[in-house]
Amino acid sequence: MRVLAVGAHPDDIEFLCAGTLLKFRNRGDEIFTAVLCNGDKGHYEIGPEELARIRRLEAEEAAKSEKATLVSVGAFPDLEVYADSESRRKVVEIVRQAKPDLILTHHPDDYMCDHSTTGRLVIDASFAASLPNYRTESPHTKSIPPLYFMDALAAVNFQPTDYVDISEFIEEKGKALLCHQSQYRWLLDHDGVDYVDFMKKHSAFRGVQCGVKYAEAFQRYAVWGRIRPGCWLP
Ligand SMILES: [Zn+2]
Image 1 (cartoon, protein in one colour):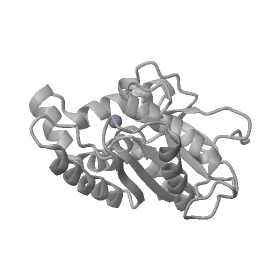
Image 2 (image 1 turned 180 degrees about the vertical axis):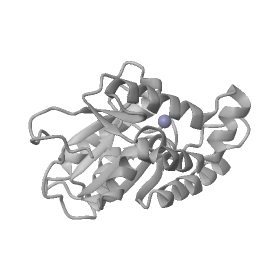
Image 3 (image 1 turned 120 degrees about the vertical axis):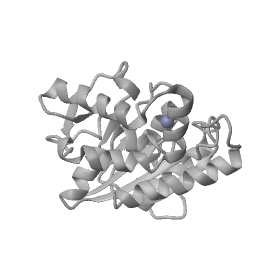
């Protein structure tokens, strides 16, 4: 199976669904990732151009650690991705390059605009990608894939429908998250938040809910055309 995860910022995938991606990969599935924003606003001291450059490298390193193919990173500056026709076309091309059987992305009601817009764009683009008359560089996909929304940060206001036991992959997930050193250092120095510890607490909380040590939570996008029999998560 081909699995595509689309995050708003360079570290979102590692925080919210990398355990599941590692589990998919471990059973032989192909992993594709895409990051829509370049992360250029995520620091108080490093300027936007330099930060975007650093965060691209960090995203590449994280994808490498997951043995994922990074299809696209940073097509939009932070806080400048909109659910308009030009952006949809870019995301359609991302979907067509990955040709996913399953998509993971943010919920359209997530906590900030880059996340919610990413969710909206991926829903619309993965539908449009299947239509031959909607033209981009790559050919159209064969079907509209099932889609699951990733958890919200700190699990706030997110009602899961499905859980993935990631206990076996929690250390590897932590290492993937640590690839985002600029964010790790920034949050630690300025907010006193240890990012990896935060992620582990979050995963442990979801684990408590489903009776395992560490878990990731998802919500199925249950609309006509996206529903398949059974659970498609590992
Ligand atoms: Zn984010």
